[in-house]
Length: 315
Image 1 (cartoon, rainbow, N blue to C red):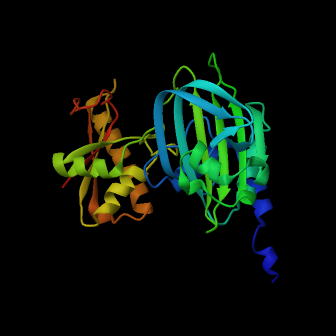
Image 2 (image 1 turned 90 degrees about the vertical axis):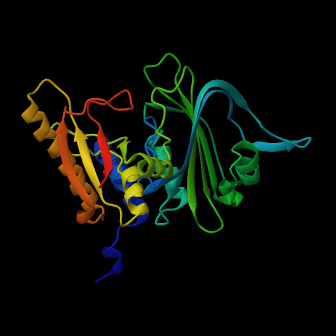
C-alpha cells in the first residue's frame, strides 16, 4: 500500500481543520486542554493541537500596537508605524505541535482573518519584519520568541464586536532553531476586558487543598443533561491530581434551584459522576476519586457564586 494513502498531507489536514464548525473546533481544543490550567481568550480561536504555556493579564495599560517593521535608530528599537491604545492587555503564548510548521500556523490564522469579523492592520513575514531579536526582547520582552528571521510572521488586526470600541490584537509566530513553534498573542481591549482570563496557578490550588482540606475547582461546566460540557477545562483538576499519585479525593457537586431536594441531590450526583468518568478517561485511577452530590445542602462557600460549584475534598 502506498504510504501517501495512509496519511493526510499537512495542507489537506489544515484545510479540514479550517472547515470544521466552530463548536467542534472549540471542543477539540478543550479536549487537548492547556497544561497550566489556562483558558483560551474568547476573542481568539486557538490553533488545533496547541497548548498555552504562558499567559498574563494587566489592567489599564498604555499599549503600543506595532503596525510596521522594526529598525534600530540611535540605540532604540522603533516600528515604522504604531498606534497607542489604552486598555486591558492579555498576553498568551501557545506552543504548537511539531506536526505543524510556523507557515501552517500563519496560513491558518490568515484564513481565519479573511472573515468579516477581522480587519488586518499590518502583516509581515521573514526578514521583512526586521530582527527577531528586536521582536522577542525589545517589543514582547520574551526571549523564548527569538529565532531565525526567516522563520517569523507577524500580523496586527482588529476584531469586530458589539462594543463601542473594537479590541485589537497582534500575533507573532516564530519557529526557533530547535524547531519549536510558538504563536504569541497580545490582545488589547479598550474599556476593559469583557471576560478577564483565568490565571489561577495549579500549585497554589494544591497548596490550598493540603492546607484547607478542600478547594473549589473553577471552569467546570455542565450541559442540560448534567454531563461535563465540552467548554470545561479539566487541566487544572488534572494537574492537581497528577501532582500526587497517592492522593485520594471526593468530587463533590453542589446544585441549588427551584426543584425539590431529592431531584437536586440526584442531579448533583450525576454531575459529579460525569466529571469522574471524564477524569478516568483522561487517565486518573478510578480508585482515587469518589463522586458525591449534595444538592443545595451546603449553600455557603468562600466565593461569591456557590450555587453550582464543584469541590475537591481530601479523603
